[in-house]
Image (cartoon, rainbow, N blue to C red; front, side):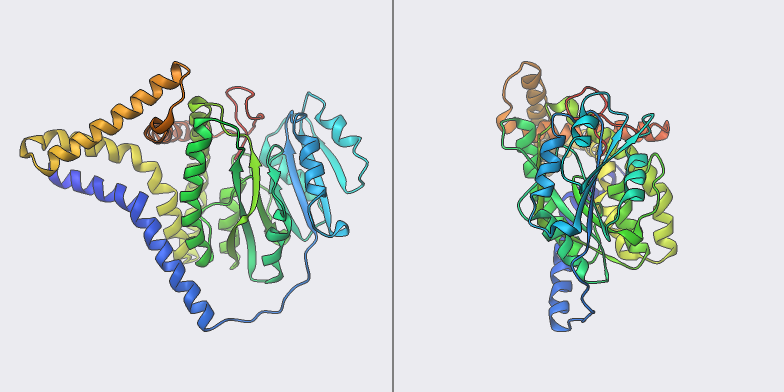
Length: 392
């Protein structure tokens, strides 16, 4: 039984972090090949009108750069607007937006604070566009990002398009690890996109067809819910890494830990409610991708615990088990060294990868505990403002 537990845990971890990415990439290539062999033609729609929705709480540092950068995008001026929803901001965010000279910029104030979901509902209610673009106040659009997001919507089958949030080039171990993780995620998301679904959109930069939007509940995280709703409506979701934003990285491991705790708690809350609906609708592809890309990742901590516990009991058999335990010991020692280095104020270098992997894995346990307590977070604060984090 001990050996069985070891190999089951190893298989689960291997599938989650290597097997699924490989399978979805192969399936995506096959889907693209079949699409080229028998292309389906749909009547093209004109370039859509875009409403860029920017929820903000005390974003005076970034809001003008965000608004001006959005208006400077190469997109027809008459088909673009910016709706900033201030969620009870107490700094000069409201004044800066209200004084903006461009009539395409509108300010909506939400008072008292009610959280990001409520802010998005208010912004969408006031929006005039055919396609809604959701983004963060401190995530600045890369060149041509809006045009790339909008282009797939000329196909009436497309319901959602996600871009990719990147991190600023300023130094920082958190940025380096996050950038590597984003490259890994992009490989998976390209495969999922070829299959017509995304296990989640990137909250910093994605677009949704207006007709698919439904008011969000307070604890519903929009970037995970909207691909699900698009799938239930019979629409496809796409991924374009060329539609990107750039934002500041996390300050340190503590901020990254809190961010992942919140994401896991919100994700579990949402999947509990919406996964049964996908099953009832027989959307088996999205079900497989959500379970593999999201839910199974949240089991990493218990799987690792089983793996190392069983490995200790199997050590007397030597050989492979001895080598496996030694490899785990080295990995966790490196992670501990990374934690100590960060606490001492030193750069992490190559220690960043094991440290942040263990940090995010531990955040899965804390996120599950928060989910059980009903503690998914509804409000947010700007990056660097303390324990409360921006909603993803």
